[in-house]
Image 1: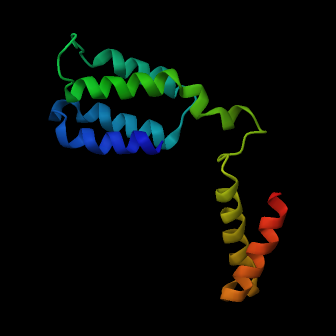
Image 2 (image 1 turned 90 degrees about the horizontal axis):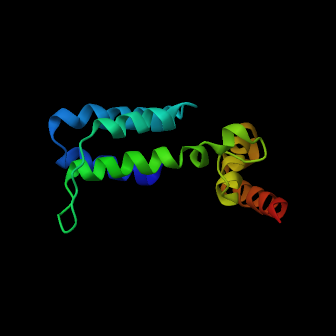
Length: 129
């Protein structure tokens, strides 16, 4: 989702105003991750005209079409954690450890100090291996 956000910000600067609505819809879909998001993105892709010929420079509309079709084609991969309970929302073990630390810091008094956080980090890192 990070690259889509970056591409959206870049496109917002160069895209003609009449196409900004499709860009806003793309952002909304990426935030909500609805089950039918891939189909909706494909419908948006069909609405954007594309006449890219060999040797021509890509326009902002071509870039928008590219982002829409790329996300649409890979929608199942982006939302796999909804369908498979074995897949965490993030597969990054470091992010998972940080998330556990944050939750623990909110509920345990000892994590308010630097030494408490370091001790907790040692404990949580030993559970990752």
